[in-house]
Image (cartoon, rainbow, N blue to C red; front, side, top):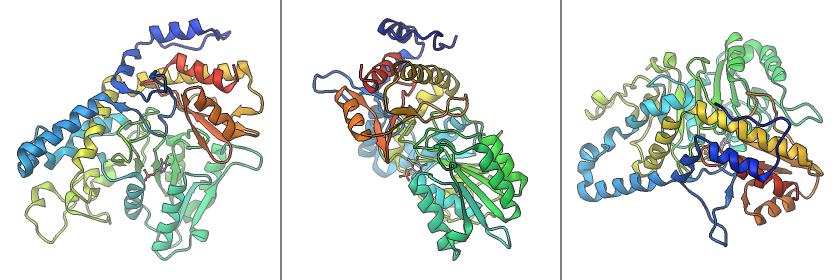
Length: 425
Ligand SMILES: *Cc1c(COP(=O)(O)O)cnc(C)c1O
């Protein structure tokens, strides 16, 4: 049974404690290490949308790699507990299940912005009249830099080629219909739609299947930045017919600062070993990789976009974390996430803090764990006050505080503590 927010709302501390005690995922919290306050008590951590907590198991898996390196040195490539030569294969099924892909459609490699560039090389193929890229205005800056410099690097002018769709004047959110209209309007001039699945600042989630279908209807490719989606919302990337996607692994995926990122390439493209790409030896067919010949033969699937041999020390924490996701399941996590984030929203509404409002949309499917709260004034001071009360959360320019009760390790009492601090109770 999925827990839901009671109507009318029960804002008592007893209620929150009771809900945590009854939470079937409560034990998972023990698998993570929490930062602690001056009194030694764990802080209320609502910042997993920025940097996820350390899974205890990551220490063990990294230590095992140190041990194997010490014990085996070069032999570890073939004889480590998890042989390094095909370490990335550990993610073949795990990674696919995480985002609703088929095995072979997902690979863990590089970092997010790098993957975005690598995938744009293959999937933004300006030709004749069809040259433009459509993205959201107010995207995470790295995405905007990537797209615009990529366009320039190919000898084209970003001012002509990049269409940015933003919120209407006086509004905070992008209307999905405006995105769809802009796609239709761009029509056959449109080569690529590249949008963030969940906006980092507002927490707004888009209907990936619907926007992807609209891109396809005008003959464009649809690529997604899922930095704030992966590990936050369930995905069905294969079924939604997404062409490509990429995401980082240090936010909801808890794989550590600067962790190895993920990439998805739909099977129908993965099969096309002739697709242009920036290649390296690790994307070569393993059958001939070590023949060391001068001809590149792409490996079928997302693996064919790898350039270098995988960074084992950096992948071990990702493996520890994804095993937890795989065991718990995105659907169970999302059910809890909706309940707890809904509860946080209800408390904020009931306690009505002055001079602030929740910007994140409320509709099911239009948000994940994060609520973005916009302050009319003194946003930084309010954020500092939350910090003084032991709530770890972050601030985004110009006036947004983001609170993310991540369902793996946050619960009802955490949400209540944050709402109380926010509302000056
Ligand atoms: C977090 C985030 C990034 C960060 O990029 P890195 O290459 O991982 O440093 C980029 N884009 C989006 C949408 C993000 O949320």
